[in-house]
Image 1: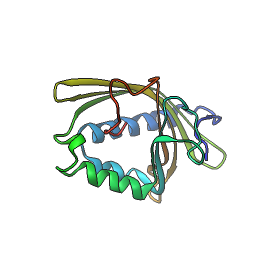
Image 2: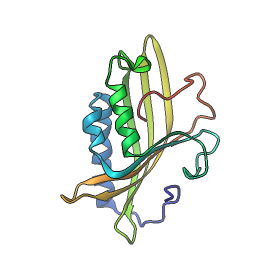
Image 3: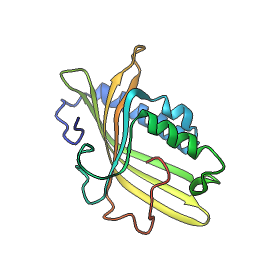
Length: 170
């Protein structure tokens, strides 16, 4: 399943709904409400962060910085919420900026979202900035709420230096 191309017709009302969804998601992540954030995923949902040198990579063939299905994502969230997660304890302080949100539905009713992001991370006196774009695919659950089928965060960085790793959710 590819999320790199966006062929759905732009829909202004759907874009406004997608924008609200992304803003609410940003609040969940910045407040470290990760178990609530996990509920934004369908059971078959994926969280993907391709490598910086292959942003359009295929998760079936290429190496990804993060390539989590729902089970692995639950494990990641469980780990990040524990004190033993040294990479994120105490938790980083983050602030997310989401912009240029465009959404449309394809013929199958899936919602495709494009947006830009900047995530600012402060921890132990260090300040890191992650900049990139989202290419998400969502479906509506039984109540009509948008839920992730694919959440893809593509970094514009040419390398993870000086960061070295991605221990937060982008």
